[in-house]
Image 1 (tube, one colour):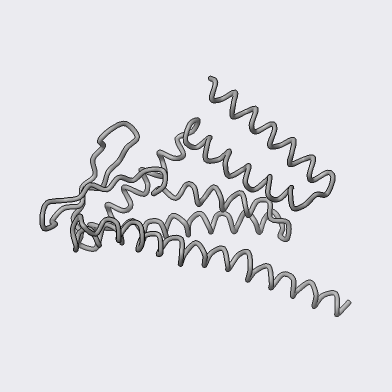
Image 2 (cartoon, helix red, strand yellow; image 1 turned 180 degrees about the vertical axis):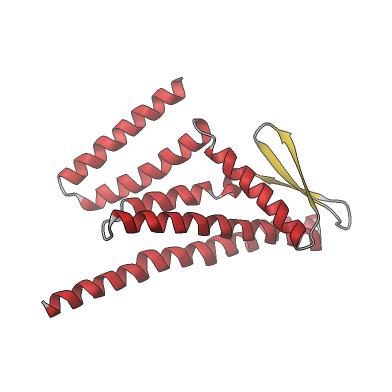
Length: 206
């Protein structure tokens, strides 16, 4: 009950600040407060109030398990504790490695940030922003799935000693360095430049 009340109070404070900045046309603070605050609220609610985080963890674990077996990497799923799903990587030399799929591996943090940044982005219509949010959410899930399977493949091929390289370097490079930066560049740089160019062209023709 205390968590619900705290979340409601935080949401009301966030909404009041967003409306204040919008009414007074303080656009930078409006965008920062709106996007960051919404992302934090989504993460907090998804972890403590709604089964969003657990659902995304389950989806990632099951999809990673299915895709790994599809490409010939045998894995097994088992639940070690409530709301915890693990991917059991087998056929290593020696033994096996247990990989836990938790909040950081689920893609929820990146999805919440994506929703916040796009929903309050001022340059496009609400319909376009919602469409980009949906496409981005699918893209984030797919990219995260590729990252998980890549980590599993490296562990399967090279054993437990490769966990740091697989997870910390290669996994993050694939997910954050290539995919996420590419998505942000395409949406917030390339599309914005095209929108500005269209506006300038329209004004010159008017």
